[in-house]
Length: 184
Image 1 (cartoon, helix red, strand yellow):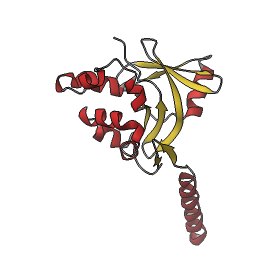
Image 2 (cartoon, one colour; image 1 turned 120 degrees about the vertical axis):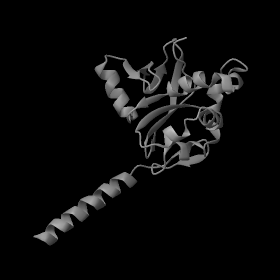
Image 3 (cartoon, rainbow, N blue to C red; image 1 turned 180 degrees about the horizontal axis):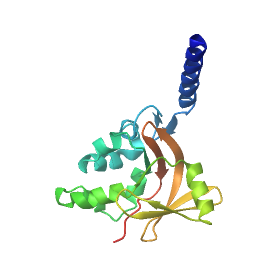
């Protein structure tokens, strides 16, 4: 009896381990994003997210995004930051604008892990829209157009999810094509 119990526990551990390895790495910015690494460990390897990584480092949020989480991060690419008015990124990176930078970055983060299917279910339950509460205290609105997932900020700015479900050990990243901004 003891042996059977031990074997069933071992089988369950093996099964659980196999399912966690079933999550595939996704290529983002020319680098594999491994589901066994945390958000920061993966993001630093993406050549498309150097501006975001620099901003997270400047804002002192590295430790937070390396913590257990889980987090859902809507990660703007370098091209997304380039869409902001000239000089905006440089201004935000100044020490006197630290609080504003932290607010903007945490506006891109939702507590908990929400993959694209979870967000789609929330949109369906919300009759076409889902409100996502951000870590900064603001809200994002998720919606779909065809099979594409979009996020709208509190100012009406829209961002398309270009790569969904980049699984991390402490959450999930959805790559977006525009920076979303909290209410002015």
